[in-house]
Length: 429
Image (cartoon, rainbow, N blue to C red):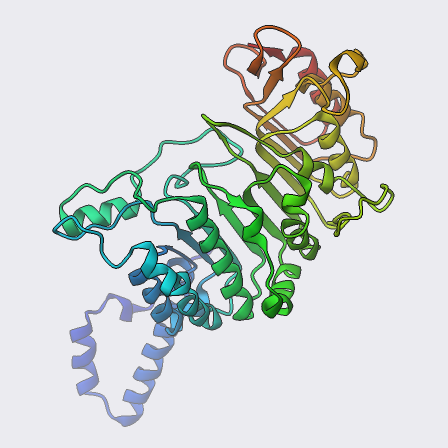
């Protein structure tokens, strides 16, 4: 590619430019000034596009105020993406006592809702908003984690106070705190009238969103619905088990996001167990042809869905199969990460189940391969697990193909052959 012509003014020190200007007459000085202005405009646009398209900041008072000030600058129109990080430490003063960044202070300020609304009202070009916790830096939900780095919150506190912060403060990544930040972001983005297309929640620690965090208040319904209808990508980490836990709030929330192209749902996977997401997955797989349940909304329809990702959850084969079948005509990418499949379908007694019906990862792979109108461009399966109830030892077991091989990915043609071959080679360890 040809290089743009080099302007020799770029090689001159500012002092020299001032000296040249002293010797120019009015006409020449005007032309010289116009040239410098054109250079400034061109260079600023290119610089701002690279330097200000993405911003990362913690949800603390100082950084939120900084965002408000930035939103008023001429560089704000170049901002395309914001990553918000929830605080993970107790902010300590030199004496070791907590500063104003305590829960009471944040609650009085509505978790910075007013400041965020002011900032978002000025950020008209923003497309992506991400809510992260302190351990989600350089981590992926669908691939093995890369090396973790020390987060900025910890470094800032250490530099300011000389004291190593606690790994997890008394009000750290609790579900309540995370949920409040999430709901505040939704309300602030909606009230500001933003046209955000991508909303992502990436929580790698134990904290999750709960069904109540998706409640749409009547006074904000019009603006929130408009915001959700504009979304094309939604990534959430949620803890729900029973139908009545999610259908009246999370269900309503999802039903308004009808234009989604990319949906990722993570549960949790820690020492306390794995999220049982069967009720949610079965509901997502329902359609207008299913018998009514009497609970609204009865079903949700993402007519443009191209990417479906499920992670950190326990789900039955039939629930996954029905969900994939529902969106088979539009799906292009399918991802699983740390998904556990029980060896029963949960609807019948173990002794009553047909032995030919495989409730396992190999069985799921075969069922996906048999879906006629499914034409995926990519499928990935990471760290699959199986829960044994009918054979010893009971509990979670890893599913591998070869020693240590627990991440499988295929792109392009030959998907059905890949899945059938994978089903033959999978074994529990």
